[in-house]
Length: 136
Length: 136
Image (cartoon, rainbow over all chains, first blue to last red; front, side, top):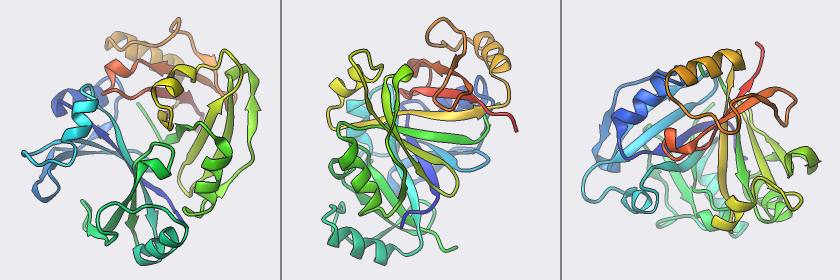
């Protein structure tokens, strides 16, 4: 079912410092910060030849990553995102197989404008997994 | 400097259960466990179209991931690995830019038979980064 790794999201306390680490010592191609108000994060895309890194930092008082930042004040990998052909097929299969979908089990529109769901870390080795519908 | 994302390594307490999660609900192509005695881990490769997931579990009493497993008993993302063209050029650049290379700053031979180094998570937003020399 899962296809390509769409991105790794790394939550950081200070976006400027994190961008400088990736642009400087790691010599990566770092984009510009973009506020995603409806997602409660500011995001910076780093394009790698085969996937993307997304640096995210909290935006606003209700940012969904505030509790993660409290637990991980220096930052850390927040989630990884796999592509699927059909989010509704993915929901059917995961529900049948007993995996827990976060929220109300209905897809939301993600940061790239595609339907997404999140799977509970307790079902997947302590990793928060996002599935994003990307039509091939 | 950094090129493609070579892999994401996810440390898991129970390899069989983790393999079943990826083969079952996530429907991925999961390989067979392989003991890497000199690296102190048992590893399972999961091939995605654009990169790899490596499930790792501790092997032996001196496994380098034992302390991670103590802190994260349910598992979690242990490190991410970026490819570089030249590990010696990477070491020069990182040292000049003030990043801390783990160990004695000399490359080791990694799980894929290529020279690798690890960078200190405190320099990179709480993420442990492996750099692997992969000739293009």
